[in-house]
Length: 284
Image (cartoon, rainbow, N blue to C red; front, side, top):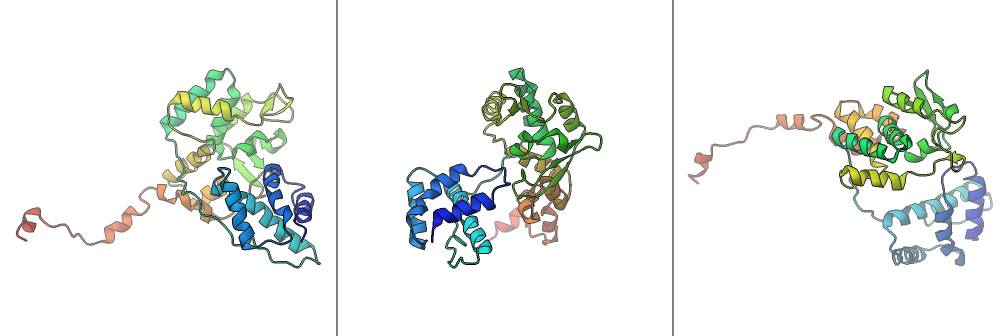
């Protein structure tokens, strides 16, 4: 088994149209090049090797997902491939992450502080994340040929989507106003004049705005969670929220189900009233 050959085959044929960055993950997976076959012992060795560098289980799982996909892709497309994919079914426990949801007041504070940079790109970036539910990369790589202001929607192409699914995102008035402000380049929505390309990240500016807004720890991806939380709290069906987020399976959207108004509380009305008078209990 030539593991380097398998990963190279996957990179050339399976990822050639992907817009996601895999170079860093492939770099760490070179660890497996020294082995002729993969065993469960080798998998555990890799985990210990990565943990010794302070890497979290969630990161290790993402790395193993890449090589798992590479092995499965090779087995599917190479008739002479004859080996067992030991990566299938192997997954580490991850920290139980509870999404952060901002309320309307916190969103307002964040938007106010984002304008202090003198550049409305950060403000409109945050505004669009909150009003479309897009992932950061989906917005930053958005081109004008995928924005239809008159018809009030934008398209996230499958090459940009995390699950490789083309998603149509409706636009409300706030999103359209933001997009109209940004129309200053023929290709990129988030155009960076300094690099003559799209913006790669707003991480540092976003972190500074969060700190000044004094709203606690907030990640950029939490704005996507916030978008979903606002809809669920207003009674929008889980299926519709799933479609707006571009989830491949409605089960992924279940993490927001507890936010639905009166979601399970009404079920408790079916219980009998078991309350007793406090004085009657003193006789026991």
